[in-house]
Image (cartoon, rainbow, N blue to C red; front, side, top):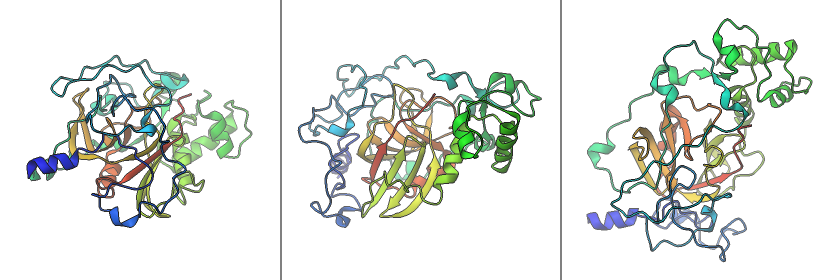
Length: 362
């Protein structure tokens, strides 16, 4: 019996099979006949086979997890990284070089008092390669991941280092999201910080609990504005396909995720941190192929609570840190831990995931 269960769990890792029919073994099997949906956005039949379903956006590449898996066209990264050869099942994953922080936002720092950084600030838990899939025991599955430190839920803006020295009431620095913030607030759009700009941005930051409220147009302020716009109808632009079953939508442009069942939003929208430049979260159709509530990163040996893997080593998971850092993850879809916990209770094995867009770091 254990052998049968293990075999059933070993779906093609990061499977992005033809949209939108989920595997017959999932709870959604009866909801969508195989021939009932148009296949315009599906993988082309003549596409090149993939080297293996691994996290090419987050470090060194492992070989195929299952040699019998079908080639998946939509798993191909837009800018594929050089691939290492296949890794044997028993070999240990090797940590590759971490890329330098990219984009003009890389120099921003958390706008908090100076001091020794606690763990939640330096948290970088992501997966280097496809995980070893197994069925957790009932005892293991009953253990709930430790909650995040209280300060991890603070809405801390990343600011110019000059503004992080303390005592700044109204920033004179032009933020990396200056133009977008000016446009959202219906201010004159010139991309330059002014006294009027600062007052308006400060008022928004105070209303939404963003710290420090000093009028700096940073990544958290802009992310909050996009979240506010999306709350009524995150799929207003109809970029996430509507299906008769659950679809987890990942909008890399706005750094948001939600789950919709038909046209009804059953989770979110919630802010995310997706893969950084060169390690982007793979776009296209995927399926949740393994869920592990208490997962630990293969590469960093740090916790990835409520992990739901959908493409090789890329997963939805909670973090114990601030997801609004200017530089993205190593490929995973990072979430605040409380929201990752809620998502855990919404998604199921074999649920579909649709990813589109591109994270902007500049």
